[in-house]
Length: 58
Image 1 (cartoon, rainbow, N blue to C red):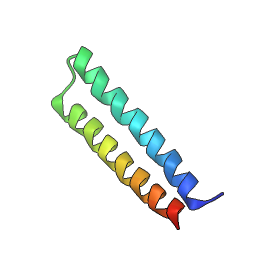
Image 2: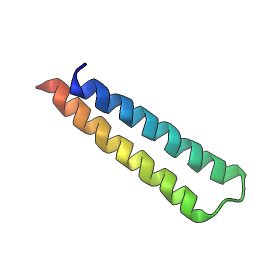
Image 3: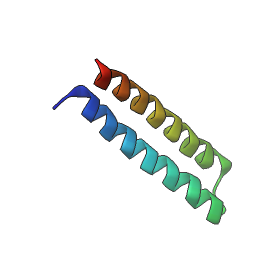
């Protein structure tokens, strides 16, 4: 399996976890730190996605 495909999988998992935390924080009264963790997971997922797209072009 190519490395870029693994990175895309990791990015998808991180996006899902981050979005779940962020949306859950919107509807429930969770600590603000969990919302920040959700945003951080989305940002890390974006990083993996960009790296995967760069590897696909090679």
